[in-house]
Image 1 (cartoon, protein in one colour):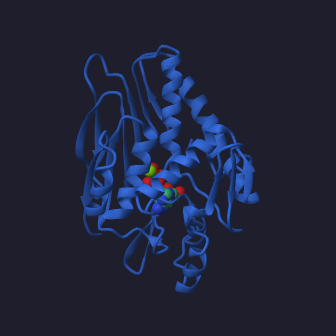
Image 2 (image 1 turned 90 degrees about the vertical axis):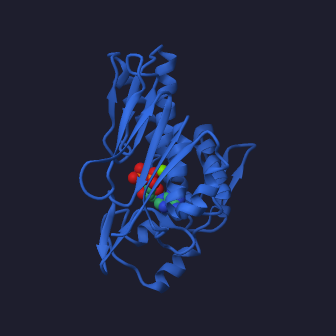
Length: 276
Ligand code: ADP
Ligand code: MG
């Protein structure tokens, strides 16, 4: 689900079913890869009246666009297409092609009509991709459902994104963070009622001209982000915030990333820098 494996750990039998059902529902709204989803339809039509939930996630995305000074930008979708990340047919485009596609990028081109939940794009060809925020939101929704059903302890792992609901028999959940290069773990995090989200360049990437091109883009350059960061781990009370911030800090790099984090005092960050 959500382009990854989702794993649920709980002593409550019904937990996994509740989580999978809810994630599937959210994915049905927000995945650009599902042609029937609201996001896919919006991308095709350039204008759509969406559900309050989809509207909320797009609105939040625009807030992160502002707070990150444009580093977090869901309109990167045409760049992912151009570089072959959408169909996994990777290739390095020409400067000319990148320049042309950059004309479609920029979240100020998304117009939100609060009164009727209509979302529209100010330019034809604009498309959105919620890949950096939808997983976090889906986890938040899943946990809300678990709480409604009285489940107090559960761990949900959605590939680089982990929600720890409650604790594990009185102790915080212990989460190991994979070493971004090589074997083993680089960190151990104790978590209770919170989310840890990791964005890195080591899962989805291709190699060309002796360098690594990963799936997180710098919307200013049209190239995969090259801030010197290889992995960012954010913990926050909710998934949406942790997910968006880890991606934004990956684009911004250490210095500007830490500036951004100051605006979110309930979230914490760990940044790993390095070269290939
Ligand atoms: P993962 O999907 O591995 O958990 P992220 O949460 O960092 O990693 O999301 C990466 C995805 O976000 C990309 O695959 C793409 O769909 C989208 N994306 C890429 N660059 C940006 C960006 N600058 N702002 C917002 N979304 C982005
Ligand atoms: Mg993210």
